[in-house]
Structures are given as C-alpha cells and as structure tokens.
Image 1 (tube, one colour):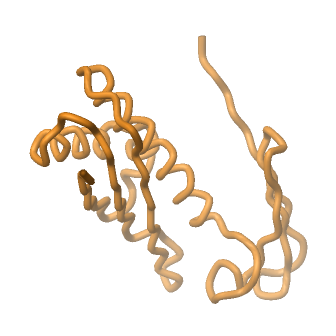
Image 2: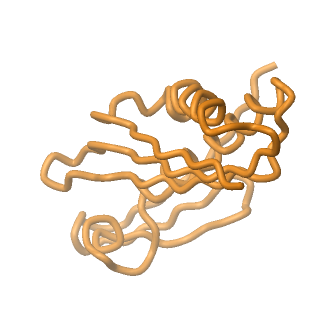
Length: 142
C-alpha cells in the first residue's frame, strides 16, 4: 500500500519583500522563509535546505539498509547534504553528500560500494536527477 506524505507552504506579498511559512504535514516542524533566507543569508529556512534535509535522511537510511541486508549492521551513518542553488537561473545545480559511517567488520572498498549504491538508489536521489550532478564523499570511520 502506498504511503503519502505532505507539507504545506504559504507565501504573502511579492518575491523580494514577501514572507512565507512552511509546515511539515506531521506537525513536527514549521518555520518562516523569505527572499533573504533563500537567496542571501537572512533568518528562516528555504526550499533548498529542506531538500538537503530530506536527501541526507533518505541517503542515511538507504545506506544503513543496504549494509544491514548484507549482514553489516552499522553502528551509525551520518550524512550532510549540501544543495547548491544558482539564483540567476533559479535552479539547483548540484548536490553534494558527505557521509561518515561506523560499520564493524567492513573495509573501505566495501563501504564505498554500498555508499555509491545508496547514492544512486535512495528515493530522494532518484527524484533529484534534474540537478547537474550529485556527488559523494563517503568515509568509513574506525
């Protein structure tokens, strides 16, 4: 059975002076966003930050699952996703995943193989194929 998730946003005013509010459908978080929070360094969130959070979460889960299925249950997988927005073209040009994993009994090559597979196959990576590139640095920590 399909699982549906939703979030909502409301924007008031013009692009540069307007304000918005975004809310996760679960009610777990809501917050403001503005032109400055998206294209400059103002307070509040922005769509790219939310995409980065979704990508980091999905990737960490996908990598952990791939490893565990093959008998390598990780102690931890931590991922930071950095989304780059070209404000002139108003498009995401790249996403960089930086991952650190603690996985007992796994060598660097094996970890790298699973990390690359998760990058290519996590659901959010698949949705974000419109970015020019999605890059990955994966490090196995001992």
